[in-house]
Image (cartoon, rainbow over all chains, first blue to last red; front, side, top):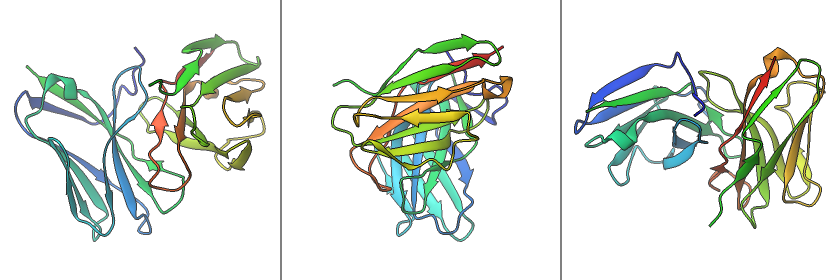
Length: 111
Length: 115
C-alpha cells in the first residue's frame, strides 16, 4: 500500500504499553483540534477531537490533552495494540472548514 | 454504508500530460474537499466545495490545477501540463455541512506519479 512517509518521527511501543504522541500547533486562534490515524494506503480516519474550552477529553482507549499556553496537543493510547500501528496526525481549525495538519508521527507497535 | 471513493487509486503519467482525478463523496454530503499529501507530510488543503460552487480554492498551487463539481456530488480534480513536483497522494474528503465540527470523511486517495 501507499506509504505516507519514510522520514516521519517514529514512536516504537511494546504491545500492551501506553503510547503518547505529541503535536505542536501553530495558530493561537485555533479553537478546535482533531487527531487522525492514517494506515498505509488509506485516508486519514478521525480518532478524537477537542475544543479549546477543554483541556482533556477521553474516548475509548484514547485521551487527548490540550495545553493552550504552549500550543501543545497530545494523544494518549492505552494498552497499545498491533492494530494501532499507523501514522497519527493532529489537525487544528480556527472555526472554518479548513484544517491545518501537522507533520505526523509513525507509531510502531512491537509484539 | 459506502464511504468516500476515489479513482483511480494509482495514476502514472509523463511530464506535460493532463490528468483527471475523480472523487465520489458520501451520499448527501454537501461539502467536499481536496487535499494533497506529499511524502512525509500531512495533508494540505487545496479546494473546498459547498454544493456545486468552489467556495475556497486558495490552496490550489497554480493555474494548472482546477476542480469541478457540476452536480454537487462527484468532483474531478484536473491537472494540466503535469510536473514531477505534482507527484503526491491526492485526498478527497466530504462532510455533511461546512464548519469546523462537521467531521470530514476521507477517501483512500489517488497516488499520482509524474515521470
